[in-house]
Image 1: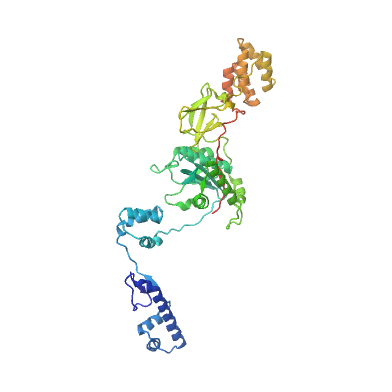
Image 2: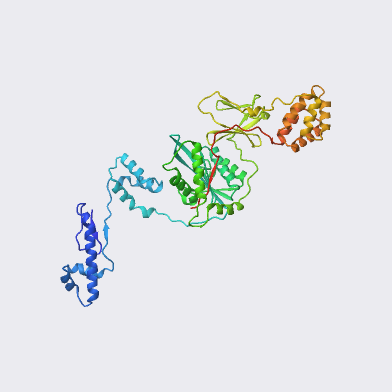
Length: 500
């Protein structure tokens, strides 16, 4: 190693690591000489370099150099290229500067490849390239309701004493954040998280910025994933993406993950998923009510101003091809992954949608996308049957005489005596059975829907229970559905407002 004092080229240099520790003391000595020489010349303008050198006991070259230099002497280490690392130059640049891996990880990988280098030598080597790879960009702000940013990041979290890998999704407006976690990273999980984020925020921005993940963008074809375009069209936003290795273009969402990891996830343990959710919710409340140093307002205040600029949500949630159809058996069960789950009896013999939520819940929807049941998935055992007894309440229907059944129907659909008489006239054999089925189905629909179906039956002059029930389900949605299966679950999505 060589130590050289720039302002004094005639001074000795240090050429090995034994002499180098003295460089700081030597530098201070040269600085004191430089100050003394210049002060003496300032007080005695007519004094020459030879006389100053004689008075101070320094060489004339030292005095001349000090008088010529406007700056004090400065230590500068000569650049030293470690020959051990030169063969790995491209590897270091790619891993550390392009892929942004931690220096300690890159150093470990170097050593595994046979590179014998010390910690200090490695960090000195990458230090000399840092200015070359520094990037600058212009900060920009979006108008309220103009842009949302969506991304997700994996974390390994200690839950119930086990290391569990979860995906944390984050959807961001200009001043709001929503977090949702899942143990799955399928396309359905990504859409579910984005959908929940929009629902919790209560509206849709003009465009949503994402990265280039294959569930959203097909890089090889340089086009959006067709299903994501369907999703965007359903909610009415314009999809946009960040270029590869341009994290600053969605810096708000990137900063949110960093803040979440450093202030909540790091060095934290959770007793269960419910405990994880509750503590995250408490963390959210703390952040929501802090005064931001830049805006001088709380994030909630700013969010309330921004939400008014959002477009309204569609009436129904997005249902794509990855949600699967199941036909409900006559005993009101559907089969999923080797187990059977009950649904309300009014859906017997009909098709329903199923969706796996957060990787651990089974959600069951009617044809019009209304949730009718929810279970915690059983993944360890097969052949089990899970039954919610409330799904079977009233499945036997009401029994009684024709007059009793007629009164029951008129309670549900007032002033429809003509319909009852036409049914009895057309179905002379056991009309009570048809009316019983109609009453049981009509209990779960609104009076307006029942009146519309009666008008259709009168129009086509058809008075049969199977036709009546089919028309009800085709033209309307049950408004009364038995209580869903209880599951011990955290909130489906936790909203957190942060500003960076």
